[in-house]
Image (tube, rainbow, N blue to C red):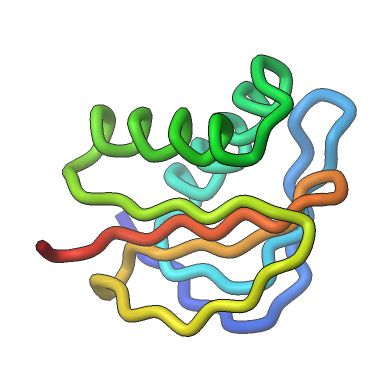
Length: 104
């Protein structure tokens, strides 16, 4: 499974009526699509950003391997370290979504 590395790109993914703009990615296309789809499902189910982040984290911990960190919000800054090939940052609607796999 080839891994894509694209910092600061503008890639569009569409899920339903929503469009995601990928800002930074180091993960396979399959995982990218899963991240966007899972975030969209969480936004349909929850209104609070912390609930959306928790949903995304639990889903990625379950589907892939722990331990994922997820940040969701309309305004945030970050400087993070992640395991190579397991990071995505994208915007979906009015929120930024950052997911990354970390070592404990």
